[in-house]
Image (cartoon, rainbow, N blue to C red; front, side, top):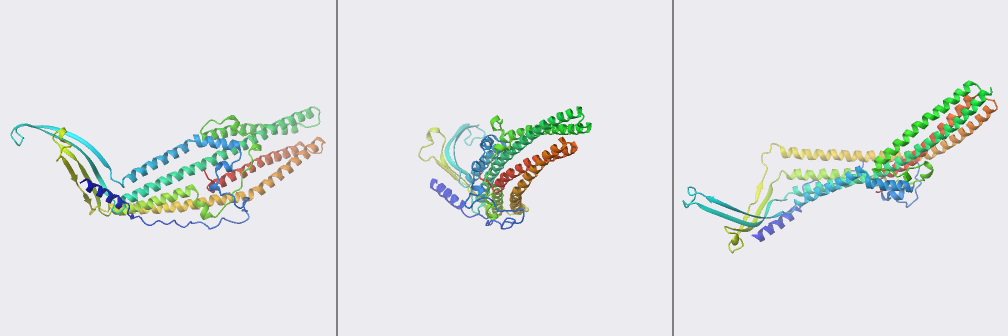
Length: 469
């Protein structure tokens, strides 16, 4: 009997390895163009031939700023969303192991005993009696011989779910890295704006005091004094606004990092940020398929495809085995005596005949799930293509925008200087000085914004090209 159970177990395991009834999977064609968009908004990347692609480039190779590197390291260790994603991976892996275990028989050892007294009026002998029964054995219960691949399909489904969860973790990791960098850059920009507002306030207060002296001497009018006051108040408003913004930026960065930010990691401005390396764009069909969110969507599609195999197998018979072997005796001392061998073998077959359309509806649900995930997979590719195209468009024009903004800042600075000279010589009113000062201040703020856009877009490009973890 032991040999019979072993043979049945091995046969069941072999049958479990048979092909499933799931449809043959082939990767759908990407519903996007074969090349990135071209036109005035796009230019060739500054990357050199042989440079690693974003997906092969670790974040500490892309970000050269030591403060950003340390902040990203803190975030990877403390961010709660990333922790949840890691726990989900472990949970999904355990669920896969549970489903995989169903492919092999489970052997249980059991031992037990019972003592029962029968009164005389129900005893076969007409006298009261005490019956005893003890047993020790091994058994295999409700093991399904996977003739039609139902259990195998469910195992494949669980595996793809696990792989999808792992890709989701990678996607969250890449998003976290880019979010920390972007928040750092935003904080640096707002600190630069605050510094500019403070410098402007100091300058306007000096101008106000000068005009006030000129008014006392009769060299300027009260109108000039009130116009100067508007500049001071406007600068005070910006100082308060950017002070609030800097505090909120620091709070957001601390939330993303998941820990208190050390003072030495807080940027003072753009001067210490440094530069980021250019990235080769590659071929869309290759680049997009390496993004973790696209890989996650494909694993979910494969999972739904495997589930169709399980739904199809439900139409066919299910064979389960219940077996046991051991010893039994009415005395504990006789459990292992000759002749105490006991065994049982109970195969069971279930064939669906009338299920009122349940299996048919289950197959329809599985097929529609596959169709839904196919559409979501294609949409994910289209969204990814658009994200890369947008980042490339920004990358292709931001250098010209920065050059123009720098020229504008220089021109408005010279205009402001000349307007001050003309006012002091009495050739023009203070209104011209005020207009020139506002133009210069706006151009300087605009220059900070363009620099933030340039650096932030490089971070975005690293992310949407599937930057390596």
